[in-house]
Length: 409
Figure 1 (cartoon, one colour):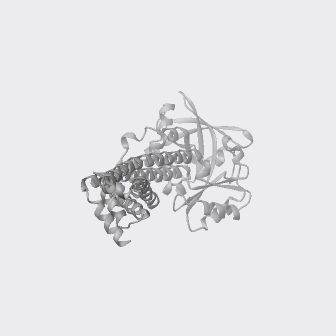
Figure 2 (cartoon, one colour):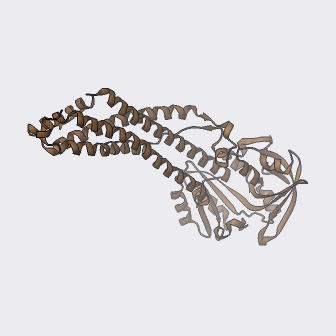
Figure 3 (cartoon, rainbow, N blue to C red):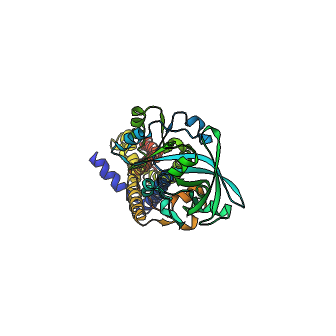
């Protein structure tokens, strides 16, 4: 095998210009895919992280039956909320937990009326992890003592034609489908670059929501924040097994559309990657076919001195595979270095932040993330395609007739 490797290495560089062209095609193709994987991973981390900050946590706990009526934002008080909070905070991966009241309603000014999602929150508990609290552009964030005070988004303020310290009527659905109305003062306006979120979500203190919706001392939702994104299942399973009378869901369960969008993106990237590497494989196929034609007499000589067909097949197969390995190593290393550097610097997205809901959740900077799994997968795919592209030329070389090959001109 050592002799075969030496011969393979020598043959690879016999026509070094052609080999360099093939290596460049493979390396650039793999580099591009590694870089795009890094961008996709970075955008996924940013969007998921910011979405969780808007939701209030990785996990949400509701009363039994909430899931069936979620579209109507039902006000179902959670039985024993203190027990839920204690069970959540007892787990080491939990960084915080807070209580909420969630319902739907309308925000009305003199100029317009728009449907909104109304959240009564514990400001001091949510502020350290809240994307909203970090993006107050006018006024201030909420406090636990606030009464008749509301925090709204920039887009909603524009649509209602109101500003800081203006008053609006807030209509919300209380238990038993009753509607409650209260005039509120705008104490703060937030802007996160996501128009749909800014238009839809308004916030008040939990105490104010309990008073407005006649739920003294009660809550309808508990949000649980974890120290990482994507590892919610063990915590969800543990809470489900230790608590009764509640529904425990992760942010993934509550946002399937976003996950489906990224799953579709991954599939498209997979197909696109196979096409890019397939083009590089065609280059290897062409290179190996030229090598077979150029070395026909050499192949005949190898057969004449006793080299078996399978050995000739192996020799040419190793040659094409080695080109794939070399190109893969260069492309993978180059891609890893560039993604690592870009991940520390980031890309400024401020100009495109309001182009769509997802772009808004990305934030103003995108930091590519290098993940070992996709990198190794791309590298193995390169080797596989290189070996596959070399198979036909190798088979053709192995089936050359020695007598004809020796007289080939």
